[in-house]
Amino acid sequence: MFNLDARLQSWILRRDTPQTGVITLTRRRVYIVPTQPGFLFGMVLLAMLLASINYQLSLGYLFTFLVGAVGVVGMHRTHDVLLGLEVSCVQTLPGHAGGNVTFVLRIRNPHRHLRAGLMFFVDKALLAQDVFIEPLGQRDVPILVHAKRRGLAACPRIQIQTVFPFGLWRAWSYVWPRMNVLVYPALSAQIAPRSGRGKGIGASRTGSGQDSFSHVSPYNEGDDVKRLHWQSFAREQLALRQHEGEAGDEDLYRLDALETHLPLEERLSRLASAITLADQRGARFALALNEAEAAQPHFASGSAHRHALLARLALVGISQQTESMRQRTP
Image 1 (cartoon, rainbow, N blue to C red):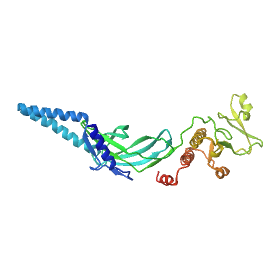
Image 2 (image 1 turned 180 degrees about the vertical axis):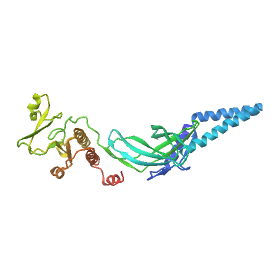
Image 3 (image 1 turned 120 degrees about the horizontal axis):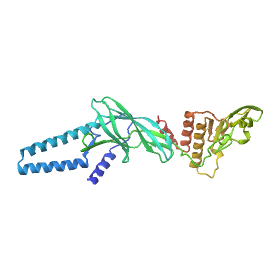
Image 4 (image 1 turned 60 degrees about the vertical axis):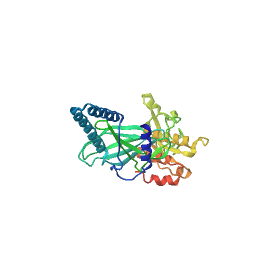
């Protein structure tokens, strides 16, 4: 039975290709087979029929056909749970290598009956279950996929399955949206907790800022203790002296400032960690992949800027073909 199921799955997968836009689960895309309890149900039904024939039991015939009708109705109901559903990938959420990225599927029910007990699988791993969709309604289902390496990750083939309502039949279909998501470099455990200007991994300080005292700013872990404002320290407050001409808390992270003997992936991971920590501190930060960018860095802060810089790190060394694929990523 399992060998037959594997052959059937292999035949189905050979017919499937990635698709763009809305994917409608038509009759040609929905498959149905008995479950293990369904096979047992059929064997019991057959035994009841043979007993009724052997002993000429009129009530046995009636009960057998009634139970058989329940099984047939259950088969049609299980098949109808998937039939006609409209599936599309409406959003992607990037992540770091070694972690998860997310593809958000929108499941729309265009009919007036409930769709219940939906389960979602990727490579036989259950990612979502007991999903219900109201009549004429829709629901967004996040699909978390493990990302092994940085760059662009394509949406995998996703199996949608149900055994509703009786568990006697298993109906399933495959959807394979043509969609890509960015995978950022893995976060490195070697990064210092504070990547200030001129400190940390690949960070350089902008502005000389040694003219005269201007104001104080809050102390962050990793700041130079030589710049402590001692009057504030006497009041049991940690603060730093800021001087006129200083550019403020601005971090410039340069790829060429890292040790060249380190593998490229390790350098990118350390930069990704430094950028993430700088964003958490609320600092203004910039990334320079070469000397020209280092000469005119673009400093900014916030989550959008962090994602933009991590996206640049994700695509370092990626081919032009992959770059053209990224243009299709929302």
